[in-house]
Amino acid sequence: MNTRTRIYLDHAATSWPKPEAVHVAMDQFARQCGAASGRGGYRSAAEADQIVTTTRGAIAALIGAESSEAVSFHSNGTAALNAAIHGVLNRGDHVVTSAAEHNSVLRPLHYLEQRDAIRLAVVPTDENGRVDAAEVAGAVEDDTRLVALMHASNVTGAVQPIRAVGQAIKDHPAIFLCDAAQTFGSLPIDVLDCHVDLLAAPGHKASGGPLGTGFLYAAPQIAQQLNPMFQGGTGSQSESLEMPQSMPSKMEAGNLNVAALAGWAAALSELKSADWEARQTHARNLSRRLHQGLASIPQVRIFGNSGDLPIASIAVEGLSPTDVAAILDAEYGIETRAGMHCAALIHAYLGSNLEGTLRISAGHTSSQADIDAVVTAIGEITAALDYS
Image (tube, rainbow, N blue to C red; front, side):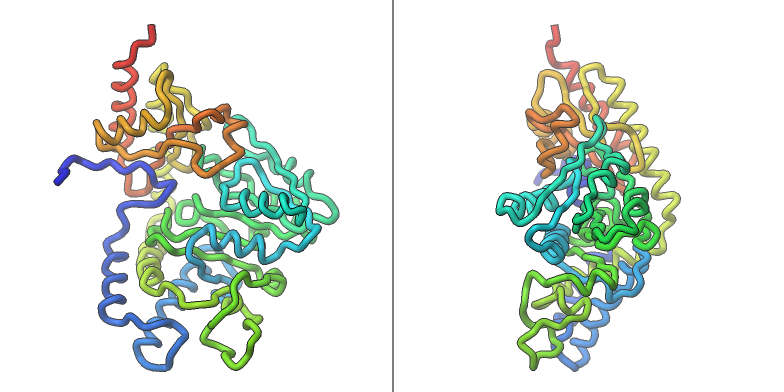
């Protein structure tokens, strides 16, 4: 058995370790309940219903939603984003998005554009991966149906000006979709204050839930316009061949992953009672320490700046990102991510479009010692290379 110390620095992909309460809740549900939600009137089915209700309510409270019914569950953040994009767009619509987006947004939009179903405008980023709110608003046309913008870049950690964008287009009929994959559980977001109509996020990142979880928030006026991607059993109105028209049932055909939702509910309960100010201060301190440490290594190029999220994307002179990640893993037990990070367009603006970057991403469970360890390791790797 490998007993080496494991330093996990890929929190932008998924958080680890999960709170112990997550494992306990999932195990307890699987062993002691195991019933489907919305599919029976007996006691264990009611317990499953309560888990779903509790999780839905916790998410709604965290994002400032009008009601818990505005939140529908999906198998992950990608599924939630696809439900939003395909659910509101019609042939001939105009869409505005940014080059910072994850492929969970870019690929569905590209798919539709390639089939002449939509017209697409892509707003560029600056060299740090940040989008200008005025450029987003300026790309909106009279017939723009959807504006899709992530809350923060998964490549550089750059936080996007979603409130400014929402404020700029709030009187336009365009629907504002926000991808909060990197920020849900890390940074506060209020959908009403930011004028966000659709908000999607997975549960397995900063909020601490297990993989296979995600949600889509839909403002009441937008929920009426959403067309479900899937049709099937919902446990309600079973006498009708039509899908229910009310949220969240219209978006939740088939059984929910209640075991995963039980774990997510446990994580959200801990998140609710957490000191958010302390968590954000810790994240900023880690980001600053990481960026300053990496900047002290002459052979390292950093893409982006220190900020609210402890993420740094880098290139090491003389080595590919994949090689650096492999050495860090094999020789130091440090787990990072190399490549394009499922972000097809941003690298052209960062100047990392040939091989992508090595991404180091910490989380609220990461320590300063973890940051120091990866900086020291990269320093040792570069010291062993011949740059003469």
